[in-house]
Amino acid sequence: MTPVAAHSETAPLGWVSRAEAWLDSKGKGAWIAAMVLGFVFFWPVGLALLFYMIWSKQMFKKSSCNRRHQSRRMHVMTPTGNSAFDAYREDTLRRLEDEQQSFENFLQRLRDAKDKAEFDQFMNERARKASQERDQTSEA
Image (tube, rainbow, N blue to C red; front, side):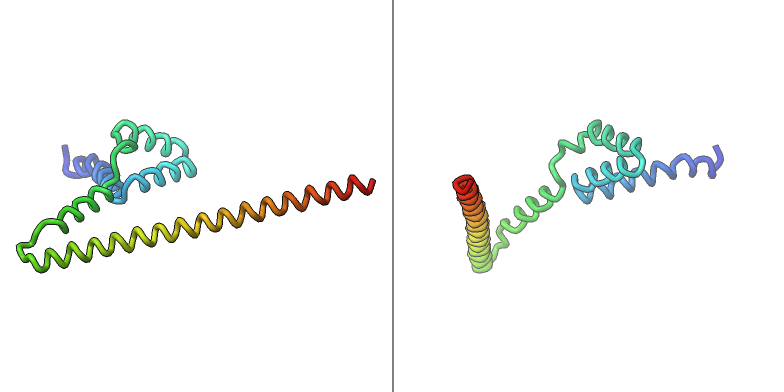
């Protein structure tokens, strides 16, 4: 086999493996986006990506972003040997988690208030329409 022939046989595999590695690094969403774009632009490409994702278990794999976040969190929690710093870090992390929980509770209260306002508006419009219909039928 000549060097040119060997290069031409391995070049597509290199491109495919680089693309696969890039999609893996971006997570499951990138795979799904690539599949959807494949269906949009040329349906056999989207179908091939779907079959590949199912065959390679990409659809059912946990996201690499979650693993990175978990490993980073575990690394943060390892003791450094400096007890003052470890206590400060634990206190800061606990305070940040409390702030995050408070903010999430605040957002939930905002969503609930918006839902209640929308529901109240719906009920008022419904009552107004019903009273208008009653007025129209009583006039007739």
